[in-house]
Length: 332
Image 1 (cartoon, rainbow, N blue to C red):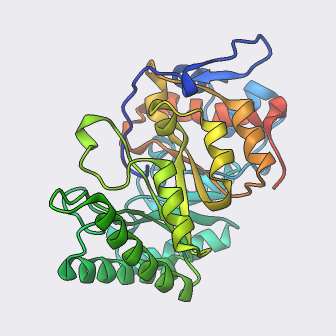
Image 2: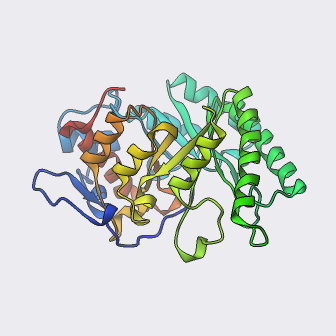
Image 3: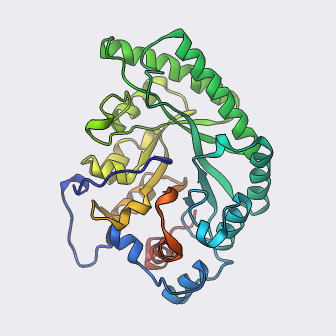
């Protein structure tokens, strides 16, 4: 998810790997070890690794790094980070902390994105891990959700963002699950209507990090997809974090096929964690599935503050370049 570090479980996606010698099977360590880490800039690292990359060339896939991901190269200022990402071939960003930024800075970010031909792929709109905001049906929590959503849509307008993520709180242990679902459907519908009027897509984000998150209402991607189908509007869609779903035991390409009718955004996970031992993800099969189902959206890269040093920053872009140059790229 945006801004939420996933823990490695060591389980493979779907419990299997193909192991074929022609498969570009990337585990978390391998993703970050692709390419040269010795160049002076990310574009230079890509050129040294692939011999055919320049800052003026854009990735054929719409990778969307988290704003602040390359702070060791670009510095701490958001506008400098956007310029850096544009120069190195990225077309979009994600920004977990956008809501907390000053309105004046939000407008500056929007103008700079437009000037550089980039877009804001997704930002965190509503997140609550401590209360049953959607499941309880409590009037005070419903009013709070709508207030938070109104604030988030105003942020989106300032930046030109057209998609925001929602983590719909905890379960309510005092209520039957069916009643909780009815409550959630009613509030999600209300939120989706507001988003539709503003030309914004609401992205439901399921989270399951194991026992510690068992109190959350929306844990399964299939549960979230079913909710989207009941709400039945283009303004309510599903956010899939590939890494997290693999760790939950899903065969991610098969999952993407099954939820393609309501899929709104795809994240490649917390890339900083990919240097640790964890799940294996069959990158060619994943990208081929996205092509087959007609997904043309962004692919989020979320490293947060865990990506340490220039070398790791260079590794991330070198991995993207390797995929682009190995035939896995696609012109959107």
